[in-house]
Structure formats: structure tokens, C-alpha cells
Image (cartoon, rainbow, N blue to C red; front, side):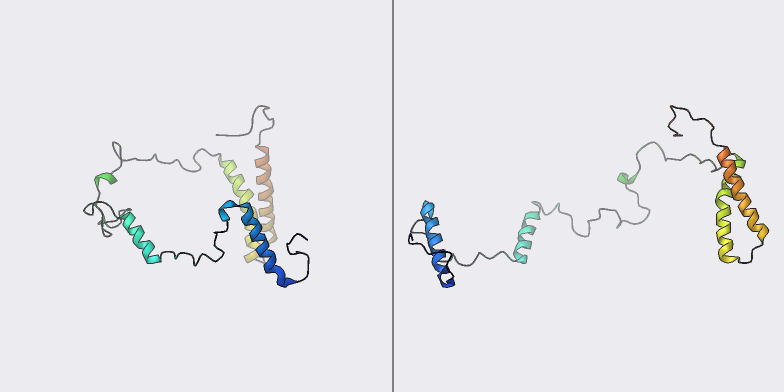
Length: 176
């Protein structure tokens, strides 16, 4: 052999010899790690500053140059919650000439066709009525069930008949 330990042998006691040989070969390749490079450990790692030392360093960085201009904790009120109610400052007043007054909204069914409203009421209300009667009114008369079913069928039929018969080829169906 060439003076190096055999890594394939089963003797585990020679692991230190293999390790020393590896370190010696690495030192030969790197001129900075010459014979003067210490083999011993470099000692414990430097201690990190404690939490109190870090907090003191942060306070020193955050401390303003002029202490007279620094606001106190009692004066800090970013949301304006500490001032008395009803107090209005110049900054709080809305910009513009006057107050904004929204338009009066139109009634919900202002321009709706009454027949269409009744049809929607029958199409949506009949199944709800059947469900509630099945849950709470077990001995409902047969004529009431027939009326609810007929109202549903008639309402859905009316709404389908109101749909446009022909479709415009360029129309995407959107309504504004």
C-alpha cells in the first residue's frame, strides 16, 4: 500500500487513523492550513447578548434625538378614541362643500309586472309551502296540496312562456 490505512478493513479502531490521514491530505492541498494550523478546538462559541441587552440596544436605536418632541404613551392615540365624544377637529371634517345626501331609493318592485311577481311568488312559494306543510301540518287536506302543485306548475309555465322566442345571434344575454 501507499502508507495510508485501508478504508475497507473491518477494524473500526483504525477510524481515527483514517480521519487523521484525510485531514493531512487536505492540509497538503490548502496552503493556508499549513503545519502551523492548530489541531485543537477553537474554544466555545461567543455568547449571544441576552434579551435585556438586545432590548436596551433597540431602545437606544429608537430613542429620538430630541426628547421634547417625543410623544408620551398617554398622548398616543392613532384612532382618535381618547378624545371626548362630540369633539370634532379640523382634520376630521369631510372635504367638500356640504354633506352628501344620497338619492331616495326606488321601491323594489316599482316597475315590475304584477303577473311576473305573482308567478315568481308561486314558483318559489309553492315548494316552500309544501315543505312546511309536510313538516308541521301532517293532515293537510288533499285539495290544498293540489292547489300548491297547480300554482307551482302554472307559475313555472308562465315564466317559461315569457322568455323570448328567438335569440339574437349577436346578443350575449347580458342585461344592464
